[in-house]
Amino acid sequence: PPSYIPTLNITKADPTDVSPTQIHKALHRLRERQTLRFIPWGPASIQVALARRSPYVHSAHRVTGFTLFNHTSMAELFERLLSQYDRIRRRNAFLDNYRREPMFQDNLDEFESARETVQCLVEEYRACERVDYNKLEYDGGDGSGK
Image (cartoon, rainbow, N blue to C red; front, side):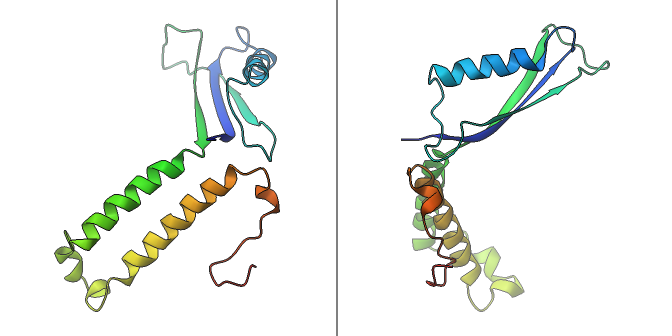
């Protein structure tokens, strides 16, 4: 199942209004309630950075911030992009401008290399969902398993 990979939470607040302990407790409650599903092979890690509010930017809210998540469902997004790329590539659509460039005059190998890189990224995200992910052997693309 899709899972969160360790995340980053940046919160802006006046230290007299909010303490790091309050933020950690709130995030801990999310983990306890299993509101967020984390990767099975690593810690349910949320890094928190508490920053002072800017004196130049006024907000009606006591606390503002954002959370940056990395999630294994990114694989689906990249799979859709690969599918769209494959359809365009089969028709050789939009390639004329590239073929005019010296780098692509002889061939379009860079496109295939980029496609392979994205395919590896999809496979990596899929592997992250496995319990034994940190025990899997990495294949550096040369078949050596190293």
